[in-house]
Length: 472
Image (cartoon, rainbow, N blue to C red; front, side, top):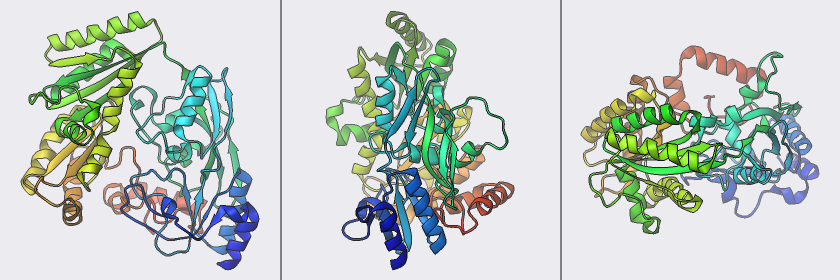
């Protein structure tokens, strides 16, 4: 191991090979549930240095854990406890390589923070629409490695849909340059889509060419109270018909989820929280390339008709961008407020949109029977069927004890219900190490066989993020 560390210091510089001091920022996952031990944290500054590090590790038979912002929720980018793995951090590779306004593309290195990409696009009068709560610290390499979703999937798709090309270092230390940014390229297998969502198990994404859009002329945001999930679903259908592609966000939030924001972040002033008869709220966003007045007229007409049809019991429309940001901040604060309430059992599930109300009613009742008093923190992206169906300990219970004693049982009940409703146990967070056994249980044997064949073909040494996605 000493020889490998000397080689790595020679390749990237001694200051970029960390072995001593507090390495918690790289060795512990974002939720602070696991802490590993790395042989070293290596911080290359270029694609060529990444390739050289990979070649050195391959020659030594040392496994590599690629890492971006380390904001994942499924333990996919932290080392195990063996002290033999290299954490390869891409954070120094954060350059925006260029923006092509004619091609509507942006090329950036994998360590570029998502918010910085958004700002770079906006500076050119364009929009990069990937948006999620961790955008101030997550990196585009991690977003692509996990095929991140976020709040605008309804209009623009997942990270996969926003990527036109990749640069990747293979497990053998070769560099594949696929950054051409073409919208049509049928020359063989789609290698780009193979690496997106592979969670660093097939290679290391070092750069990407991303799809941009014209900046909308108008953005309208509303917060609507709805009496039931069926009414929320009806509102979604009405919004689709009235707004078409202009409907860019449709977020669902349960009353208890919002009550946690009100409890732990009272300065945010959650709309309708004091009204005990509001079990659900919806956050809608409409983007329009016509005039502000035209967009606002259509948007307010939609809400008026929804109130007339009893889909909506009350609503507020943001009067300006600052108010809109405040409403979105409330929505994005739910995970932080839940963390303040104590350890919890998180689920990132998806079911067909038409079956969401039935799934929630069935699973809520199932959990209440199994664990009386359990509290359900239900929120997420109703527009694409993705719910963060989280489970909090009963109010009088100890959260830590609840997590230790009930997590396996709760996961089983929830995932069985998800499968019964034709859904997926992982909608946008990935599999990581946390859900490897779950994938083995719910993915088809044929699919698992093909995945293993791909892994063996590209990474026969098994050095790329072992123990993630696939077992063994």
